Length: 277
Image (cartoon, rainbow, N blue to C red; front, side, top):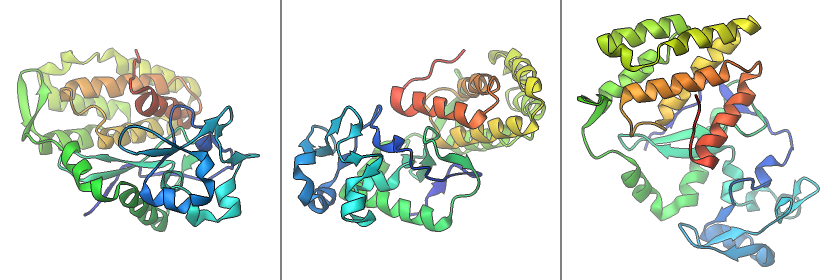
């Protein structure tokens, strides 16, 4: 099964900050094989309800196996004994409308930076994800995909999922926000009024404060990444575009756009909601 990589132009370099071990809004769940590998750390494991039956315990610092910002398992046993979720972070997976597995990267990892992720790393992470979910992976794909052929362009107009994907790639591969505005007009026509087009002016004004073209390029790159993740595919496409533009407006207020992207990803993956005006 071919995977789609959603984060072109972004990678990460571990800075040994142990943020991934802090369990701030998440837990480290264990599958059957993880539990077997961690048989010498039974006191650090607890039962839980849900998809996984076991997870690592936590204390005031985060993961109970964290010691002086270092992982006890890694130090005492070696990298191969670490739980799969630990090996996977900051990567994760989602499911595309057609059932294609998506490899994503979570921007709230403090080591996120510009660059290309090594293909070997991508291959290893994909194998870890499949190993983590084991027999349930096909079920996850089935439950995550769409089973209808149509989606909404706006409230009373349906298009195919292929068309929606094509429109999204077209809009969010723009070179700048002027071009993005023109492409939105091209797709929505008279219905462009459904979108608050004043956002474009606000974004440009904010970016101009820093006189930094790289910020504009990075914001648009991140919008394409969000579009490829399909966070908002359950709403009409014009609403998705407006939501992504509001995210752009938020990002355009920051000199360090990558850090601001981390704030957005926290809202999407940890808070499970995003409320930006």
